[in-house]
Amino acid sequence: MTLPQPLLRLHLRPLWDLLRSRLLWIVLAVLVVTGGLTAWVALDERWYVYREDVHFNGLSYLDAEELWQAAAIDGWQIFWIDSETLRQRLLQNPYVADAQVHVAALLTKVTVDITEVRPVALWETDAGIRWLRDDGLALEPRGKTPPGLLQIYDPSAEATLPGAARGAAIDPAVLVSAQSLVNRLPGVTPLRYNALVGLNFRLPDQPYWVYWGDGEDVERKLANLEAAKTLLDSGEAQGAVIDVRFERPYIK
Image (cartoon, rainbow, N blue to C red):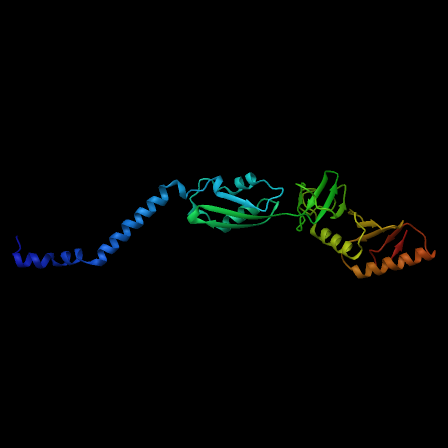
């Protein structure tokens, strides 16, 4: 059935009003522009990250190529890269103490400020000398070893963290005890360690060997050590070993 002409105009009026609406054309324009930008970003190579777009700062012994491989962002679109995810990925390298990631999306550039691990002590075992991180993890030395570090001589790696592979990590309690000891008695390094007596060392410039044990009761142990030295210096006691691990000092 054919509509009368007046009714036809009335029926088409909403469509005609819609086509004349500014809002419609604005929406269409936005959709076209958005679609074009999306296609441009998706297809244009300049938005994709390659080796030359990533810069690592703060390196002295670490290799930038090693870190680039660990980053695993080759060929990624710049807008896909999450700074914190990339940071956590780089922190999996045991020689990386910290990584601050800066993503400049419009420049397609990634800058990473690396803080390399610096050892807090040296652990000497039959397998060689290892750097010790502050959490006790043992690392092969890389680059120049800082001078004056605390040294722990432990041939059989008896101070290994329980549950870890022998020599892979020192028990943090042993490391903390050793650090506390050298802070109170400078000059006693290198320290020795064995499972029987714990930390032990020779007194600087004296013929006495000290069985120290762990890092507990430091003040009592220092008092025991002074009392034993007084007895030895006065001739009231004789021996070469001072054991301060117990309530009173023992001289052997």
